[in-house]
Image 1: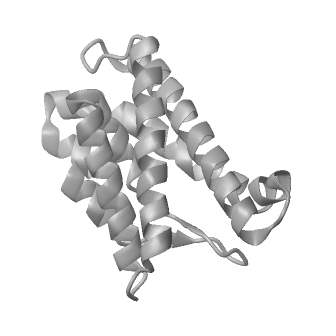
Image 2: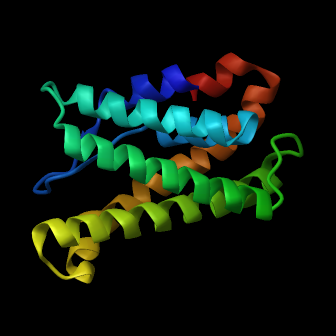
Length: 167
């Protein structure tokens, strides 16, 4: 999962007219969380951050890289708490997995967007709502598509691991 997250993150998707991109590592992060726990998810998320930084083709700046590592660590912790509280379990089947995965994804996304918004707001000296609405909120759709994909990958991986990773 960690290697798959890093590989998926090597090719971030740039939003036209925006100064940010999205990587495709989140399905692997959530599968690692469900199958192996929070430390595996944090490692996959860190690999995704590093993959995105290296995938840009230039040497990553240290400060933003460290901020992103901190953001994903805190966000992964919030996702794990939501996963546990919602009764998350990799074994029961698709429907309970989707509910728990959506709870974890919502906690992850809300935490990440809020902390990233605060960071960018302080850095750019702009109001928080302007930063979140203009630069961060458009990432919700691809992120939650990844959460749903992780919900489908998880039961597939329990049966045939190669199929889950191929998804």
